[in-house]
Amino acid sequence: MTSTASHSATAPNGRPGPGGASRAPEGALPAGAGPWSVRSAGSGRGRAALELYQYGELTDVLVAARLTPHLLRGARHCPSTGRNRHVLAWGRLAADGVAPAVVFTGRRPFRRARSTAEVAVVADRFWIAWAEGPFDAVRVEHSAGGTAERLPLERVRSVA
Image (cartoon, rainbow, N blue to C red; front, side, top):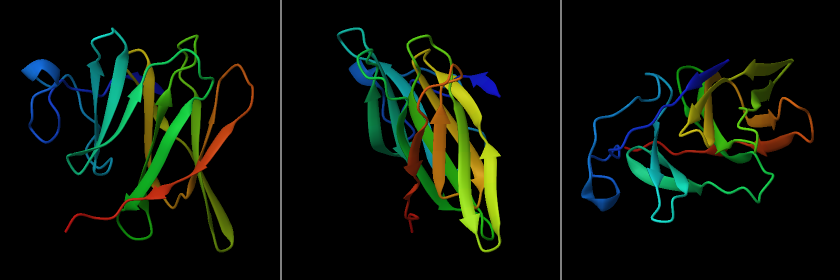
């Protein structure tokens, strides 16, 4: 499933965006999606950027680029209820602007977990995907085929 855009012009830590400008949020990750939020920003050169925040602190910046074929930039997990985890993956859209298929996977004793993730397009250049479950890796593939990209989920420590 694909939806449009979770981003805002005001950083989650309340500080204004580039140039001191603040705007009202245009959307946010759904409640229960974990400690993450995103914001789209533009550089002085006209290239879009995606800022990823974790617990209100800037964690990653992804700049739009047409020269790289890689769709997947990063993936993280943090504790949720029970044995479940909040999981998040993010990256660039392919040159054709189509959002990739994102599947979170995991292994537990005597069973495998697998979930096709909700994918949101941000600023027409990036995508984010999230889920909740016993996952430890993500697999991303363009709908036209090609090589699938995989990453283990990086652990996020809770803020005390």
